[in-house]
Length: 196
Image (cartoon, rainbow, N blue to C red; front, side, top):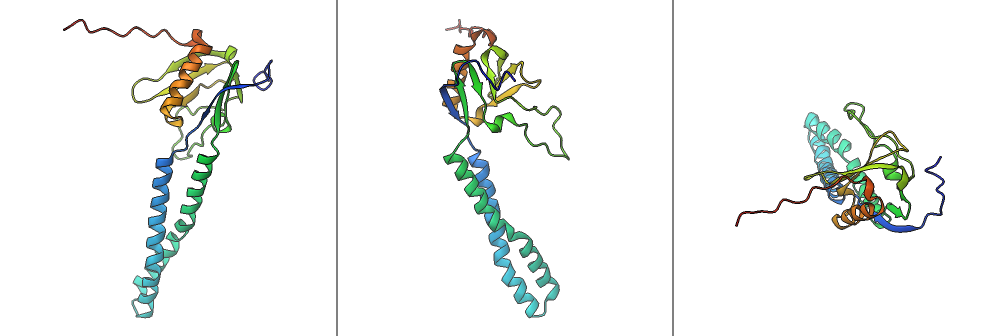
């Protein structure tokens, strides 16, 4: 495959670490910790209710507590996976002739069977030579992203701004503009305000 065997050896000119969603992961850890703590706190109360003769309420408290206790195990596991990804991030690499994608960007995202996406992106090659890029479009407004159309996959590669820091996203856009200026659409000049 052309994408797997470039003509020249790959030498990284720019490497952009992909961000993990720390805010979302932190919220998930907090929710799991709260649920697990409440479950651990209500288990003894359920046992005391059963011993004192209030069996139905005691059984309900014990069952709910046992169901919620695994959250205490999942919270530190999720926290450790987030820390591991922060310390050892995957990198999007630009060479002088190609874009090298990390595993996270090559594989299509998991699609929920109950709520399938209308047009899920397909798999991407590991290496996209600049010569295979047909067009690069930039998202406008709050949806910062670069859409890269290339010949090596039927689906468009989408690089979201939230996957990189704002500075890295701007540097990536500048590096791609310098490397393949012919595939970027012409940007109209900003209108100047004639009024005083």
